Length: 400
Ligand SMILES: O=C(O)[C@H](O)COP(=O)(O)O
Image (cartoon, rainbow, N blue to C red; front, side):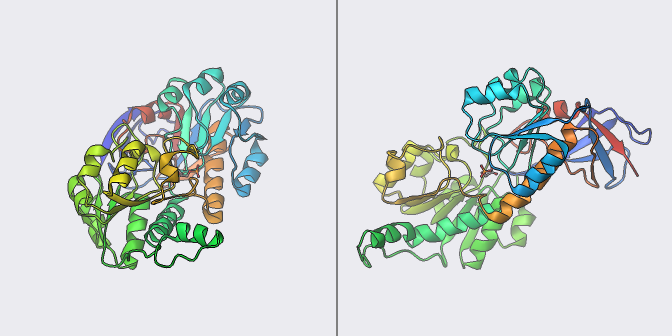
């Protein structure tokens, strides 16, 4: 699919740069960065981006969830940092009026109330991770607040966790571990299934989906993928065939979910789609809980359509421990650990902190060839509107 392009006016400090910049967003399933190019330029140019309305005094950054140490050190150099974890929504709303920037992971809901409570002071929300479904982007836009993320830092961690769940599910590792620890020795009960030669459907062939597919190929699986926006040649290059949604779910022995949560993907797996699957299919979800109708999944597990599920993410996190899904004997669960490796956490903290500081404090510059700034509309299902509004808060300088 062709890249989608939108043009808007951004104030420029440099006469060499036309004030009209073309922003192109390759329409892929999991686009995470957007590149800016001068309207008259050829190829990549070097940009420096400065946030307008920077602060004279040191900005205050609220870090609402645990962030890698290197990122915190960077923040502390340029800002007053308030690390307050596990805030209630009310506490967050109260604190936010004293903050210029907020850094979160997936556990903090940055709702409309947060922006309203900030009284206009909040300039940047940094998402130390990929998913920005916990940030109300429309409210951010209305309040002139930029939202930035770290779209690549945890790709490998999430793909590796998907593979870990896939193998653990197929070989009943979690159930067998619990039974041995409970004094049992159930060698017949926990006979598993092999991965080699099985068809794996990767739903969402973006960064994580692609990395997981590559690894699954290494395990001898036949990998197909569905993604309305992924280029066929990228899939072909690693020996993956792109197929329709219905073909993917109807032929797969294993399904691994890698799409973002959007209005289009919400409850994509439901009674109807489970009904089209091969009996005995096994499902892995390291994307977002909301892409599965969880009650429908319990029904599909009970009826045997779905033999097993391995879930890292849930519609509501944490899920109730009494939840039928969590307690189901054919389901294994982890507490949203996809990005939780030492390497991913340290990798993601620095770029997010850097972006936040750069944007909140115009004394620091952000530089790049293809502009290294990530905007909130990093999913094809979202419009370019939010990005355009966000860009109006920026000044762009073409330095070469
Ligand atoms: O969106 C993400 O980056 C992943 O789901 C990880 O979320 P986390 O930062 O809360 O671990």
